[in-house]
Image (cartoon, rainbow, N blue to C red):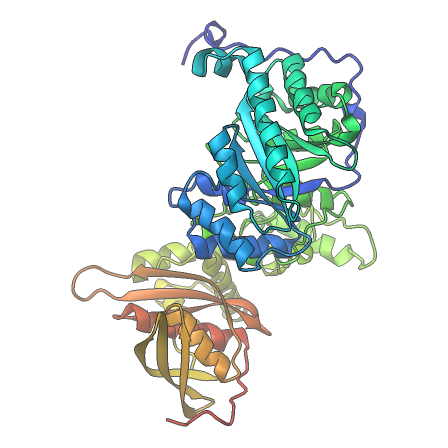
Length: 561
């Protein structure tokens, strides 16, 4: 590192805004939310989501309550184009949801983008071009006038194509890319030219997206830039100012919050901050920050675990255990003094009072989290490294949530019997809890078969001691088994699945972990061990069903084995 970084890097100049008002404002209502998980988030993945995962993510975003979702960059590839067509032709878009598509300000790309939108009820066409000095001079070799012309020509074409599609309500969104590095007066010039070319009115508003394409300054400077635009744009009553913060400086959430105080109307980002480089702004954090201040965000995160597991499945990205509101450990205190304060806070908290529990900025129940992790806070650290002993002595590397769950089993044992527990004691407790359960279900055998493109299974089990043969189909052995159980009145949801090898060589065993929801016991894990990974997975599923409290209601049509 340089001893004098100022010789190479310069501080971002402050905005000349003598009458700034945002420091005295608070957020009193939610913004318009726009999820770009399927576009900006997806393009940053090492392995982009396939069509099935994108559709699952889209459905979840709709269920959460997003009314604007950026679904693709349709001119970029046939895959992206095809996904938009599938959404439209398959009737997957709710009537109150607008899909958004991105395009560069180039004629052939804009035309291709409109081809993807044929038949849509309503859509947002998001067009952009770079406006900063560095891009103008060093990347594209364009003058300011040429940059403005490029934006205006693109908007006029979009307006013309929109007029040719009266069956689709088209909204224009324009982004001056690298807004935060663009001279403010020039950013205003481009944006004003765009709104004029579109013919913006209060009834036909333009979304002006002002992104921190790369976060370059402290969030207060971004707020100043937003307030300056808010006060100086022409046709402000015909404009929706949108924020698109990235997290290069680690302050995207703060930038979004201060930007809203500065006059913005809309926020674009990704659920858990996924996106290019350091990611987009984390929408879950921004939304739940509002919630903890008494402002309902208009998004439903009442089952945050389900949202998190779906995100992890679709993106193949883990959520950090310390992630605000969502991480596996955010409602867990390992300090004895913290635990004592939390317990006393719970005891004093009345149901109809303002929330005031130490170390917990939000009631875990509001986001569908249990109090178990709070109550068992010291179980892992205080019992001599349960997870470490299970891995080093028995070759089982437990998922994090299973570590927390199993530590409760050990805790209850030591509370009852006292004394220390050895590695062998821990294994016995683990086997009894996860591997030896036989009620109401007990695994016997299975046979797999192919049925068209589906995977079929014939599963022989004991249900409350009586043999049954269950049959089901799905997209894999586990999904087929879930459907087989459903046919027997056993309704279980698989929240997560992981597998591990317990040893190497010819005698290697597979260990499968399945997180099951659906019974009176809430979410819990099942574990299966077998030389065959499919068998291990089925044993894990049965173990999870047994432990979850799901009670079978066997149909009369079922045949006994």
